[in-house]
Length: 425
Image (cartoon, rainbow, N blue to C red; front, top):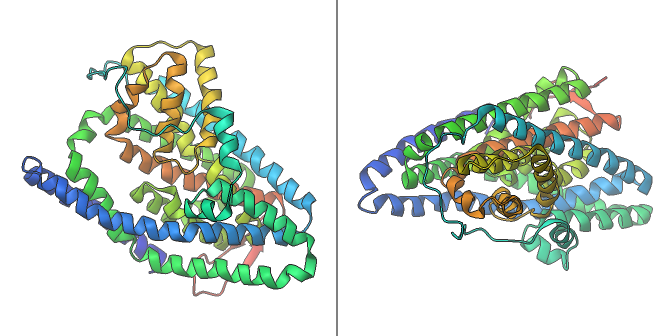
């Protein structure tokens, strides 16, 4: 499908999913039909996400290893890595601070009279440990095959780094292998094109499943929180756009337009992973160097999740507002720093942002069970933060490409057209 058609189909599927899901909720909430509908229709979403996940591990490994091998010497790798992590850290801190400021501005939890769960209530979230220890455990794989089987992106990135550097040191002897690996990456992107045709069906299933189970009422109950967070996300988009404009100039507008499809896919499926292959394809079509994009984008999926960063501070302080807990400025800054560190160790954990929040809340005498208050609407919040993660990583990739002098703009950003490229100055 052409990009514009796919976008229209996904939007139409989302609207249709809301309508059908609401009808299923009205007619089947009391007799159990809605629950059965939600269970069976979600199979289509699961199939789509499984097909995407089967692509990600080989795609990340192939593109990153080839990108590093193309860089050649360790000096280039270190320079690009330092620039990438500098950008990631800056945007993570900005996102956390922005969430902190906007939750105080909007006050979504103040005056919200809701039943507060018991402090001992179970959250149902898996605890993966906290802070530095968990982060180190997630860095180094015991087996690359185990990491690929579990889609542990951070571990695959680490192995690909070692593999690419070792391969680059072998010079021409390793060239045939990396050519074959490059072909593997292109095959994965070809599979992605086929899988993407199933996206509208998956989007319809995902949206209608959630609405059928909880109804539109859950959106009304948490309306102030949802509207406040989406307003905060729009502010963050403006900040990301401004940061991109400072570094890229007016071409950042073209980049945002090209990122609409992967961002929409991430939004409707509430999964950043689902958009990874399409994001990689779009940033390269925008003009990012293949070797830079193959290096920066996989790293960004572990270290540059702007939407998730904002959500952590926004949701944590929302829970504190509901409980009527006043936090000092020093406590809030300490929470921000803890979230910054803890969030880097939960790549691949289901409901990762909620796990981070649940781990940090008890450190400030806020009941961990407070996360139960936002579980009902977390899917809709995840949609916004997933789309934001895509925009943030797209801009990061373009910025690092330009910093390395390897960014060219595609004047005609769609396939099946002759491309002309001009350097961005």
